[in-house]
Length: 118
Length: 109
Image 1 (cartoon, each protein chain N blue to C red):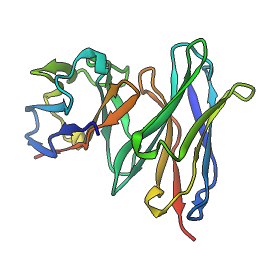
Image 2 (cartoon, rainbow over the protein chains, first blue to last red):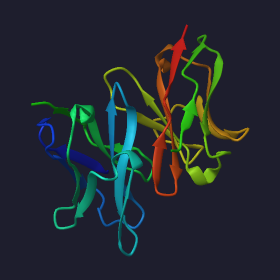
Image 3 (cartoon, rainbow over the protein chains, first blue to last red):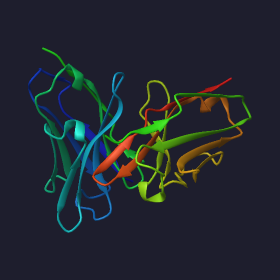
């Protein structure tokens, strides 16, 4: 059974970097069939796919156009987890953040409310 | 910028049938877009109901079915129950990433 466990701060100051980690159990971040996504949801922006990382003989990352200049999603094979880094945040980045495996979109992290405020 | 469009709201009577649709600004939705449908109730995370257009999860009631219909992805609820009142989102894959629709608020009345 695949489980995803998120961790990271719930409060980030404007202009700083939002960082979250998603620890995987029951699957491998290096899986050749899964991809590992970050999604967020806010009242103003709705559900928004941010990006994903996946391994297909080599590592790939794909990012939403809306955040492409500010985002990186990185695997950590030694800890079987992946991370989200979103820099230069503004209050508009305040949202509930989820990590999700997109084999069938059935496995989600517990969610983390991240507030951007000074 | 790719846009995925859903009906903003629909109302259905208990026991009735309703079809929610998901359209792409790029043209007809095909299986290659891997249409995925989520249900979200207030205070809860979204939960996947259908993936790859027509595959149910083990937790998805049989009254939910996914299809491709008239160039769109579709989610049909047959024999609607009061507990089906929720927000429904579709998700499509494009080369380079995924895009969510704006959601359909389904009211059971």
